Amino acid sequence: MASLRNDKFFSFQELNEAIRIKLDEFNSRPFQKRKGCRLSAFEEEKKAFLLPLPSTPYETAVWSAETVQPDYLVTAGGCRYSVPYEYIGRKVDIRTTEKCVEVFFHNQRIASHARAFNTTDPVYVPEHMPEAHRRYLNYNEESFQQWAEDIGPSTGIVVRTFLHAHRTPQQGYKSCASMMKLADRFTPARLEAACAKALTYTPNPSLKNITTILQNGQDKVKNGTPPRTTGSYGLTRRAAREKGGVQA
Image 1 (cartoon, rainbow, N blue to C red):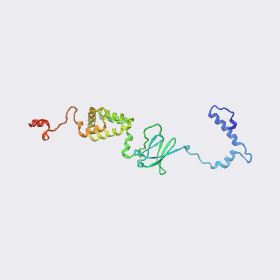
Image 2 (spheres, one colour; image 1 turned 180 degrees about the horizontal axis):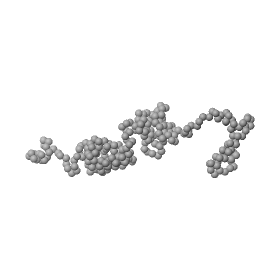
Image 3 (cartoon, rainbow, N blue to C red; image 1 turned 90 degrees about the horizontal axis):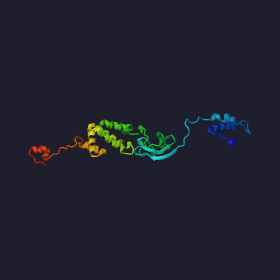
Image 4 (cartoon, rainbow, N blue to C red; image 1 turned 30 degrees about the horizontal axis):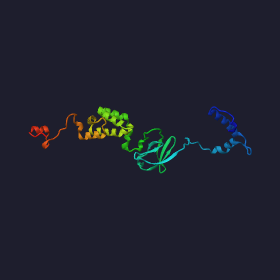
């Protein structure tokens, strides 16, 4: 390097080329007290013992320890990653590099992810999830909205309310999935009627509102028509009048 101290370079390429020339000169310079030079010593004594370079460059890793949360996620570098749900509540070791996140339990790797950056969405592997949870991976805002619009306009309004009631639409997925279950249980037509009924009460109905309406059969009662009530001896008021009963 001393021989280049007075030279000026305007790019790293120029500098590297100059260093390569000086390096070749240095390695070819004869030894003062033995035969040969650095290049001949390398080729005759050391070259045969070299091993192949690793297929990937070495990466500095950061290790941390964490207990797996009930949602079978761990946090590394500000992002969340899944591990097999069987390890919920277990303490694991996390190895984080620039490109990869690996999770170990008792020195055995149980999960590996490509590292994510600047995202609030968890990184899930379907095989890490219980069977009942895997179907949630296929859900998205557009599919929920399309399903709701196919049911009817009132259902569409309610589902949009669920999706936009939180900081992110994903937080409303659970309520939307519950709406699908209600449609399977009570029929899509009744769900649409229940949503229409709920919207007459409030512009932001809750899942509980919809469920209560369906369970009580209020979706079957037309707006403006009071439910049939019973008078004495279990008769309707009209029947009681026809039989000479006293109107309450």
